[in-house]
Image 1 (cartoon, helix red, strand yellow):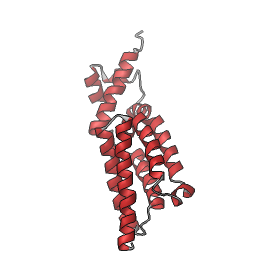
Image 2: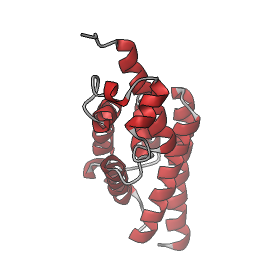
Image 3: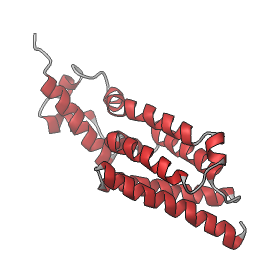
Image 4: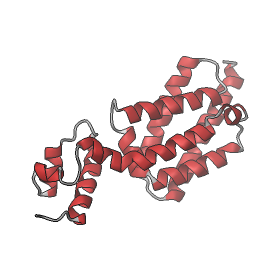
Length: 188
């Protein structure tokens, strides 16, 4: 009987993570993972029951923390009192979260059509709709798409918490101040 090796388990997770981030969950096959790990596909099943279990191992904790953060900042009490000074609090908490769970969040954001990607977009949209000073809902949806692209870009290009925090603070400020400027200027 062959003994499971932590090294192989970790290699499967690392290779899967890289594939999920670079080409997406839906475009990654266990055959690709096995080939890159220099093991047989059947050997993967000694460590994980499915591709879904690998995915869950990589994103489960990140998902839970993201849900908690968005729920906190997206609550009606918080969102209705959203002011410029809260940008610091939001960006600090989100930067810590994004730094700690960077790869898991990236996997969720880059897994086109996945339930996690949909959940993130839906939660962020709900939060944004509550906090946004603009009345035009279709415009809010367009803006949240831009915000999500910005968050993804930050996660792709930066891994240090202080750099993520700086970029995130700028992105959130840009959206918050810009939207207030649009409301003030155009009365939308």
